[in-house]
Amino acid sequence: MISGYLITICITIVIYAMLAHSLNIITGHAGQISLGHASFFGIGAYTSAMLYAEAGFVFWISVPLAAVAAGVVGALLGIPCLRVRDDFLAITTMGINFVVEALFLYLPFFGGAMGIGGINLPRWFGREMTKPEYFVVILVVFSLLLLLDRRMGRSWIGLAWASIREDEQAAGAMGVDVVRFKVVAFILGSAIAGLAGGFYAHFLTFIMPQNFGFGQSIVILSMVVFGGIGTRWGPIVGAIVLGVLPEVSRPIMEYRTLIYGILLLGMMRFQPGGLLGPESILPRILRRSVHTLRGQR
Amino acid sequence: MSLLEVKDLSKEFGGLRALDRVSFAAEEGEILGIIGPNGAGKTTLFNLVSGVYPPSSGELSLQGESILRLKPHQISRLGIGRTFQIVRPFQNLDVETNVLVAYGHRYYPSLWKSGAPFRQPGILREVQALVERTGLQPYTKQLARNLPLGFKKRLEIARALALQPRLLLLDEPSAGLRFEESTQLMELIRQVRDQAIGILLIEHNMQVVMDLCKRIVVLDHGSKIAEGSPEEIRSNSLVIQAYLGKET
Image (cartoon, rainbow over all chains, first blue to last red; front, side, top):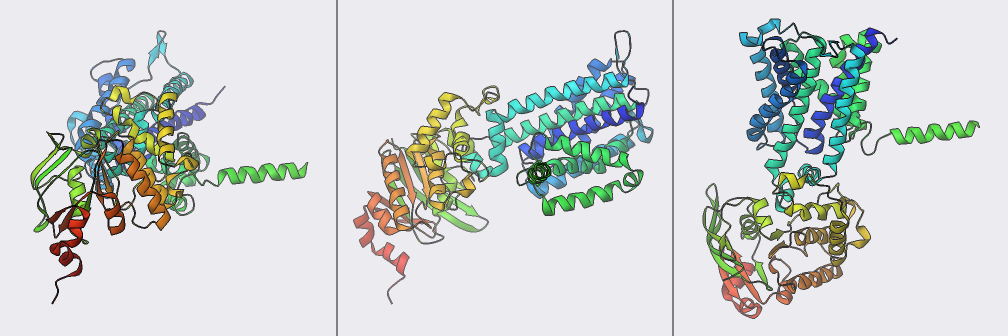
C-alpha cells in the first residue's frame, strides 16, 4: 500500500508539473517572460475554493470554472501587458502578482489572512475520492493537456509562437498578428494554471494568500528553466527534481529558495537550455555510461 | 492605377524630419531603385510602407486601396513582403520552417484554421518548390543561423515570396556580399520581377542599381531630390552634389 506521505508528494509534484507546463506555454513557446504566474494559480484556487465552500458548487463544476476565471483574468491582463516587452513585461507581471496577493490578503471577501477552509476532496460513486484516486484523476487531465500541447506545437499557432519568440518584427512582416498570438498563449497558460489551482485547493482543503506569492512564481519559473525552457518534457522533469529535492532532505526545505537560486545561476552559466534543452549534457553522460558498461563486458 | 502610390509622405521622430513630403509611384513588373546617402530616409520609407510605424502625414495606397494606419501583419497579408537591411531570419528555425511561417499568413487570420497542423504534404511541396526556386535546397533542414550571409538574404526573399506578394521591399540586398554572390542574388531578383511583382530596391551599389532599375528615386535628408532613368540620375547635378558635396 502506498503511504499517505508518498501520495501527498506525488500529488504536489504533478500539480507543480502542470504549473510549470502552463508557464512554459507563455515563456517557452511564445517567449514572453512572466514573473507573476502564481497569481493565476491563486485565482484558480480561490475561484474553485469559494465556489465550493461558499456557493455550494461541486468539484466537477468549480474546478473547470477556476480555469475559466484564470483564463478570463489572463486575457484582461494580457492584452495591456503584452504590448510591452522583455524587462517591462517582467516588471508588469511581477506587479500583478503582488496586487493579486494583496487583494486576497486585504479583502475580507477573500477571507483575508485566514484564507479559505472547508474545501474537500471531490466525491464520486457516492463517497469521497481517496488520495491515490485523486492523483490518477489529475494525472489523466495532465496527460490530456500534454496531448493538446503536442497538437498545438504542430499547428500554425505553434509556428506563430515560435516566430514571435525568435523575432517579433520579422514575425509581423510575415503576417503573424503578434499581439493576438501572445494573448492566446497568455490565456491558455493562465487557464491551465487556474486549473492546477483548483486541484490544489481541493487537495490542501485550506488555502492562504501566501501560497500564491511572488516566491511561488519564482519556484515555478525555476522548474521551467531547470528542466529546459520551451521543451515539452523539461518543465515536468524540473518539477519532479525541484519538487523531490526538499522532501529528500529537510535542510534543503529550510534553504529552499537559496538552493533554487544557486541552481538557477548554475544552469544559466553552464546549461542555459536546461536539462532537456539544446546542448544538454544529458545525452553525453548517457553515451559515456553506455560506453563504460560495454567496456566492462 | 499604380501598384504602390506614395503621396506627400512625412515622418517625424521628435523634432527630426526623417522623411519630408515624399511622393512617387511604383508599378508591377518594375524594379524601382531608391538611392541616397546614409541617413537619407530610405529605410524609414520602408518602415512606413510596411507599417512598422505610422506616418506623420501623407498617403499610402496599394492598387488604389489605402494602407495607412494598418499594422505590419495586415500589410503583409495584403501582399507587401519585405527583407531587412540587417538580416532577420528566425535564427533557431530551419530554412523550411522559416518559409512555412510566412506561408501561414493565409491561416493566421482565423484562430480556428490556425489550429490545423502545418506539416501537410501539399503545403510542404509548395514550400519546397519555393526553397528550390530561391536556390536554398542544400540548406532545407539547416538552422537559419548556420547559413552564410548570402543564403540568409535568399531566405528572407523566399520568406517574402511565400506571402504571394504584389510588392517586394528589398533593403540593401547586396550589402556585405562577395561579387559573385551579389550577381547571383540580382539574377534571382530579376526572376522575381518577371513574375509581375513590383520591387522597391534600396541599394548602395550603383553598378547594381544602374543594371537592374529602369527608374530611380533619389532621397537626401528626407526629401526626394530626383527621379528618372539611370542616365538622367547620373547626370543630375543635385544628385552629384548630394553624394560628392558642392564644388568650391
